[in-house]
Length: 269
Image 1 (tube, helix red, strand yellow):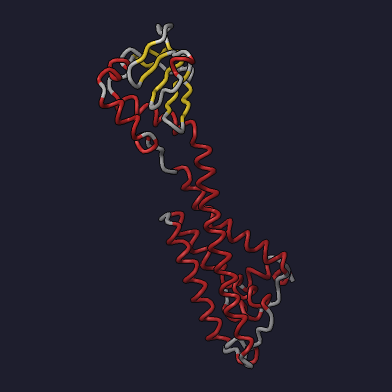
Image 2 (cartoon, helix red, strand yellow):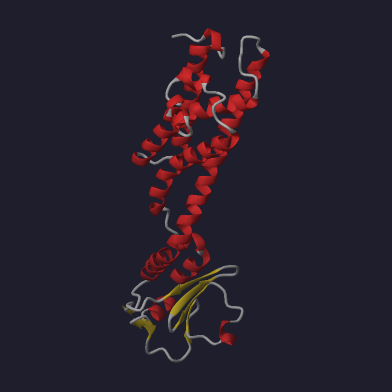
């Protein structure tokens, strides 16, 4: 029958506490790995959906000294007001100019040993401090008739930098949260399996191997994972999702014990 073949046998036994226990030998190790990856992918669905809302980078957090110095010196504001960009190119700025923290078309010698600077080139600008820098390329359709304030510059840099790095930040965010979910799920599976495996010391328990224990836990993991994933789509909170998953497994294991006492001959109707 179809329901006795993988993966249908898993889904049929993962919705009933008695079947979760009776099906404790139904999965091979490679099938357990596939099911675990499937359950992990369910948990990642809300994460991938919400990754588009990855937090934006704030320049004042990355470059606090630069922002402070820009705002404290009026010459920086005056220099920024002279910046004109048309069709993605700096115009009317052929010669080198600079204030304390803003430079336009500097030579290498002028730039040497300068820190906490905003540097404009014909097709880009660079922010740097003592140990890091970011490069903002000008779009072809970009036109700016001077920055009227330091805040205008900061807003411009944040918008362009976040646009240019959204792909990498999204991938990084998804990978980090995905690893957190993976580690949490594996600890849940192997930790709970160990607890069930230790019941073999009780003569009433029919759980004889660690493989049987992991099969029971993976069976018990399906419904909580589906619930956590669905709720995560409407109310995204990774810690809440993991909590629901863990509590759901605990409830299922308790129901399995109530219904079976971990013994085939003591299964109640």
